Amino acid sequence: MTKEPMFDVAQLAHFEIYSPKLEESVEFFKNILGMDEVGRRGNSVYMRAYEDHYHNTLIITENEEAGLGHIALRATSAQALERRVAEIEKTGYGIGWIEGDVGHGRAYQFTTPDGHKIELLWDVEYYEAPEDQKTPLLNRPQKRPNRGVPVRRLDHINLLASDTDKNVEFLKEVLGFNLRERIVADDDSSIAAWLSVSNLVHDIAIMGDALGESGRLHHICYWYGFPQHLSDVADLLIEAGYNIEAGPGKHGVTQAAFLYVMEPGGNRVELFGDPGYQIFDPSWRTVEWKGKDLEKSIIWHGSTLPQEFFQYGTPIKSGELVKP
Image (cartoon, one colour):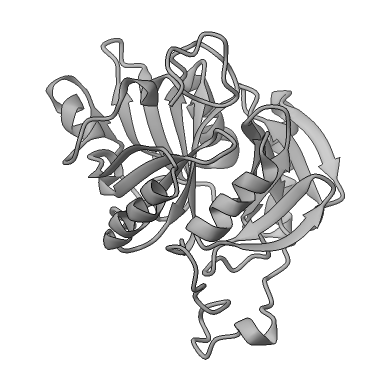
């Protein structure tokens, strides 16, 4: 008998990254990726892309080392939030409620088995553009920025974990994520997995940490919608002295056009040039890549990924083999 699907978690709402170079990180997201700064509180800066409907989707917080602050997921209703909190508390990974933050109301905080902090929320503030930023395109929250090559919206986050499958099972069983694709080892364990609660191939990806560490960040991702923008932003990045780690190219997994770059604080940022494919099948069967198919899973076309792609994460650990 098919297990009843769970629809209590709707989407990835925002994420927070740590940066030891706060203002340089803000400049990167603002002037290269065309994002807007919409608020500051304490040592945190709140930012958004021009087609993000919520008040903010990126928080950059000043910290001694780079890494992940937290991930925020939005529930499908206030009742769904309470249902999920009750189930999360049974796992022992719960932290507790917070009253809210810039752009959203009360939220329940917990961790994955690997220690990544997540908050689940319902009440959000929708972005209201000032008069000079309003657009007659009524289904867009604001004008398209006229600086850099502006990203359009938040897309996904990729986490490093000491035990991929343990974290995958948590996302599936407790939060209702669907396992869309995975790279499989000889013993049938997951080397990497891509999961979503939406029609995207992934809202969250989990990759095994090559250093055996826990709770690290591999990358955050913003979306363009047009592969040409990857070439456009590559010119800006090179001329501004930023390090392009890989791309433009195309992954086999997700089928998306990609580019990876390090922001000044040390965190890896992926830029998606198109959405890859979307999933509407309610009985989707997980795509598994192994054996002879592995080569095409990572790179469908374009240059191969450098060795550090599979080793580098934030925060940087003493066992890091290569720092880009």
